[in-house]
Image 1 (cartoon, rainbow, N blue to C red):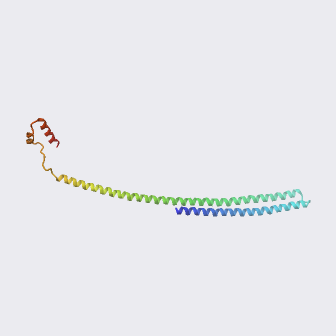
Image 2 (cartoon, rainbow, N blue to C red):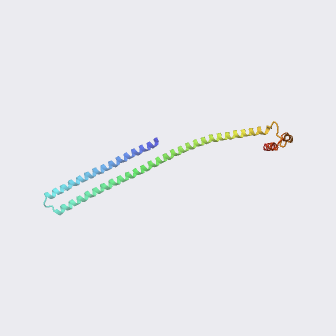
Image 3 (cartoon, one colour):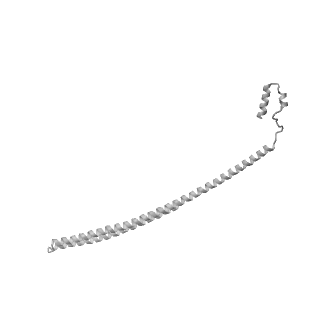
Length: 191
C-alpha cells in the first residue's frame, strides 16, 4: 500500500512541477506580448501625433502606417497564441505520458500484490489439504486394522456348542404336536 502512496505522491509532485513550468512559460510569453504591444501602441501614438502635428503628411500615408502596425500587432498576437499552445500541448502530452506510466506502474504493483495473495492462499489450501489427507489416511488405516482384528477374531473363535442341522433325537423328544415340530424345524433352519 505504501508503494501505491509513493506512486501517487510522485505523480502529484510531477503534476505540480509541470503546472509551474506551464504557468511560467505562459507568464513569460504574456510579458513579452505585453512589452511588444506597449511598444507598438506607443509607436502608433507617436505616428498619430506626428500626423496631426504635420499636416503635410497625407491621410493615406497615415492609414498605411497604422495598417502596418495593426498587422504587426496581429502577427505578434498569433505568434504568442501559437507559442503558448505549442508549449501547453507539449507539456500536456508529457503529462499524459507520465499519467500512463504511473497507471502502468500502479497496475503492475496491483498485479504483483494479487499474485502474492494468490500464492499465499494456494499455500494455505495446500497445507490444509495435506492435513486432511494425513487425517483421512490415518483414519482409513485405523479402519483397515480394526477390520482385520475383528475379522481375525471372528474366524478363529468357534461356537461353544455347534447346533446340528438335523437332530432327530431332539425332534422325537418334542414330537408331541406337529406344530411344535414345525416350529423346531423352522427354528433350526433359520439358524
